[in-house]
Image: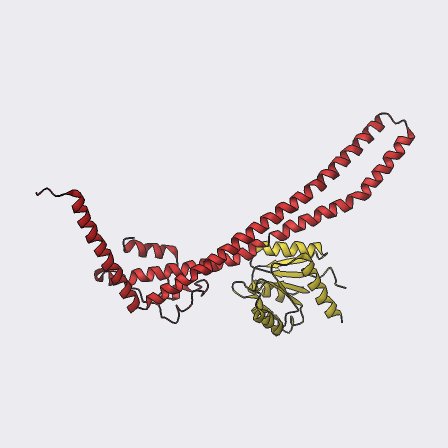
Length: 222
Length: 129
């Protein structure tokens, strides 16, 4: 065994590795082009900026909803505090009057204040109710972002299926026989937004659940 | 003036939105509100009878709001039922399609309590005339 410089050996191995990756990349690229898959992947890539917009929308909507709810709470709390404080004040005055029911003048003032308080209450509760309504309306973000998230999931599912297709079309010959899956018809794969796969079990180019995806990836050694 | 005792059906696939619409209707004085989770379930409830007003989403599984509306208009027992679309679909072509299918009103999400009240009142005013 000749003593070689370890660094030089590593360099030679690195070079070989890089060359192999280069060959594989070229083979993959050519295969994809032959099969028309480069367009599919390009389409998938084009869906990414759109996905970014959608995620931005979700971030904005959820932030706005949180701010609306917090602001409404901040408006409503002082109203509630004021109702409570004034009720406590009046109750205290009534308690001490009942303990020593003397001065009629004091009592008259207390009655007047209590009546004023009762007249004032509905305005306060209406104002609080308006804030509660605001908090409720702020929850509409769940519907709006939910719809966008559903669309995102479709895009992700499509990208996943395209990637799986690339794998299938590039399995070494000896595995190809076992794992042959029909390539999707181009017309059917022309849009990235086909919605959920409502009848995946009827289509042979579509996996119908996650376990099928997992099995497929397992069999390919991923 | 709208009869506050009419039975209203709210059709939306998002439970949150159904609750919001139901609570808004309650706020407006309408207490007889029921819910359906998509157009197919909605149509079934409507065919069972007793409803005087429908608030429906558009984009729903099984049967979407537009298709449900078309089937309502094609049904002799239901064709006069007022239908208010409340949906996130905001394209002109959507709104035109809903109008052509016979929607009585169209509210785009997100909406305010005031908007919903206006549209409902407007529908009842037109029905009265």
